[in-house]
Length: 183
Image 1: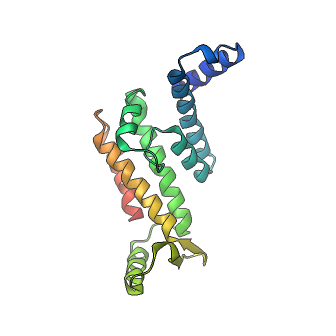
Image 2: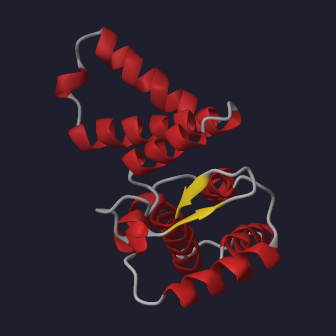
Image 3: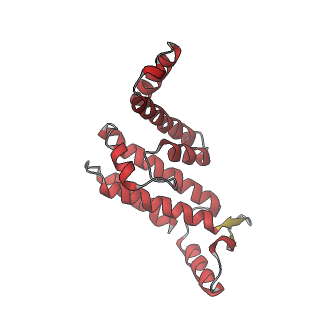
């Protein structure tokens, strides 16, 4: 992403020249956040989805963190070039989806998800944090972590719906498709 390269070049030039402290700190923070977006995309490409999610959270552009509100993220996204938003949103949703699939330990299987819901209902009133179920590989998946990832996916879709820029229909379709696989 060329715009991330410019942010990185901007930061390294002024840091090397010792002038970074004299710049507008809001502009410096924005460049650092943009650079985090590029690092998150690179981490996802390298198969490190957990690190990518932490970088998405740290950037503040997407509502994944506990402190992130959709309104603040909307304001921040307005500062990015509109042509990068579809790719950014799909990459972020892909990160969440990959982590969710890692917890499941298998490809999406709607029948398996219905069994999981049925078992949760049969348990009666139980705290979500104590629920564990066995995925196909025999490992226990943390239901609370899965619920957190589902919530992150829904917050991302809510953010996408409130954007003022027109996005391609493919973007909405891919985001919705990945969210459906997680519900």
